[in-house]
Image (cartoon, rainbow, N blue to C red; front, side, top):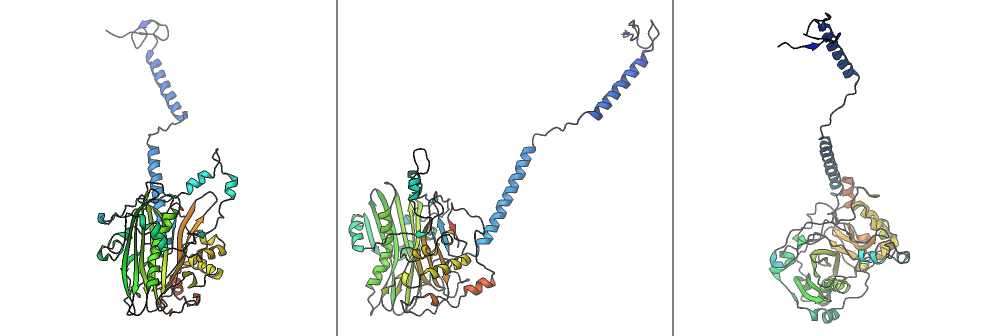
Length: 474
């Protein structure tokens, strides 16, 4: 059956084509309407705004590009930092109250040495909280009483170590104490102690002409057999409980002996340097009851000859397997007179020397805030504190520096660290108190080395470093 439509002119029902009622040709109407629709659509395509459809994944691509760019910047910055600190030697190390984790190898199980997962925050945070009122605001009266923002001695206690007192008050209550030559069982020499030393000390022998730079890189053994005296290595072990804190202490030291010389006083001085570090920590400990503390005090012979004998002591203390504090100290022996030298009397440690030290440190080391931002007179005071002074002889001459405490600002905690410089030609700095032949170390020339390698003084922060980390310049 054929389809019928309404005529657009008369409205009659008719077949498509010509209206049977009025004769109107309906093909023209259809053609005109089709053409009109085409023109309208074409015009709307030209005038309507174009809308770009989002894929929904653009932010992901942008994030990936941003991450890649940030990684590139971090790696590039790291390379710049490494390049900047590579020339630095055994010069500075700083610990803060908010350090970061330092990975350390696990020790042999038979040595009972702890794992060291990270660095302990000190007790200054508790003191900071005490200095605030109930609203958490800084107490102005307490703030005024704070110590000045300057470098200070590492351990201001001026008391002299008394072995008899130490024996009566600490050794007598111990669970275990011995002082022996352990030979191959010496945990410092034959164990994994190097993994725990913050200074990187080593008992590996270094030939005196084998150093590749005139900078002393780290504490290293340079003992040479001498016809005038013999040397014995001994180890002290202490284990006990004091005020609810459990202590394990290990100490390695040396003794001298000869047929025609009495080294009794010398050997007591070499032994007591170990024990005074142990006593200082136990007496001044702020560890809570139940804490397990391990104290290591190792010594290395850094130089010896007919006139002098030097042993550097590397102290590291761990509370519950986390590092608490560290320091470098030394004992220097006048061999011919069988006497322990007063370290503060070997060199002339006045303000002029402090100025010289700061200038040399700025060249040999990175820029160290504690010595550059403190008054020279305060730096001199630290040099003349026996527990703070670092001074020992090496094949390169003299290594001299300080253990110190320093507070960056009135709201921060103390920074504990040390900084040293190397003196190859040290004759001009000797005080004259002791008479010995200072003819070694002169085949190394720091000044020529720095000239050849374009090493110049630092005048400030040459790169950004985080105080909240331990910085090793090795």
